Length: 405
Ligand SMILES: [Zn+2]
Ligand SMILES: [Zn+2]
Image 1 (tube, rainbow, N blue to C red):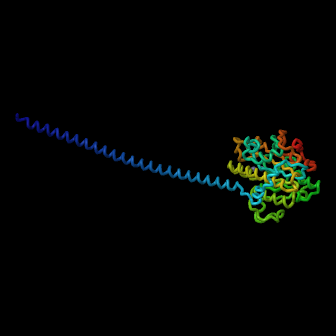
Image 2: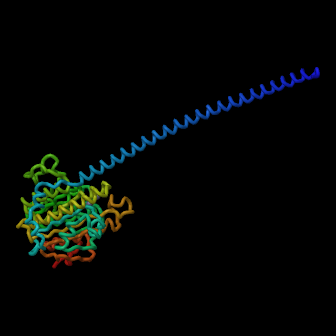
Image 3: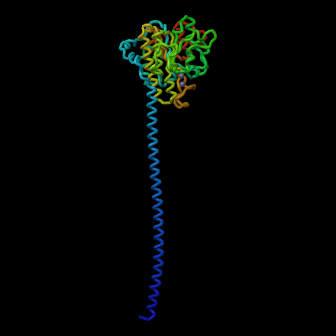
């Protein structure tokens, strides 16, 4: 070996070692950097997992909230349906279970000496005669219609709210009055004509109303008429702690709403034998305003039952049997679906608000008949007047002679 080889080799080895060391150091730094990055990425991933887990927690909380809300809604619905569905009173049940009443299904014969005008408040034609299945009025359609006459073109052609609707029927003149019982009708009611022309006492004319806005419809503010010829009036809403003086002989009402209204009506029928009665079944309107479809349709079903039992009650009392006409209608309908709030409200001019159910049953009324003559609310007063032999001199409406046999 040459003498210079060794130092050169040593130098090469030295340089190689230094370079290697440097490279190694570089690699170590890179690895350390990568480890740091991995650590920081792991941290980020952990943070993200934490966030995801928090989100899952929030989602699960939201789900619980939604479930709770759904339960709340279901229990509210149940409450509304419980309130809507009246429990039949004992007398009502007894009346329904009396087999003798099944014999009363024949059309009446004789002359009308008494008229009951029943108003199912604020029900659309689409839920009554306009429903091909008549699913909410089974008694009216299947039991009562075949023994009377229906009109398929009956309308409220003026203000489609409660007090104007009822008082236009009673006076035979469209009444443009407030809907809050602060204003009386401005033309004489049929009660006033009847009492003035026949001398009948107040107890022979009655208004029994569920809807409390109607507590001032029993006589007009017309000069020379008014209170001294007015009808008596009662409502479940007036029986808060004790009955009003008109019905002081009644015990406490067991039920409110339309069932309570029917209980008052039966009491009055037994005691006073009234000849001219207006009955308002107002829960249909109240439940419509509540905006819950099944509450509204259940109220119609309940009113359907009450109207049927009223007819059975009339035909089960010798005083009334075959001498009494029952007229059933609505004061107004409700908005058509797609107009405003739909079935929830009324007061408009569409067909939903205007078009009404009309049925008459009585000794002088055709049985199983349908008429399509356009008629309106103000025709009711003059038609009743003609049946009872009285003359409504201020009425604008017409006598619906097409109903008569
Ligand atoms: Zn009404
Ligand atoms: Zn209403």
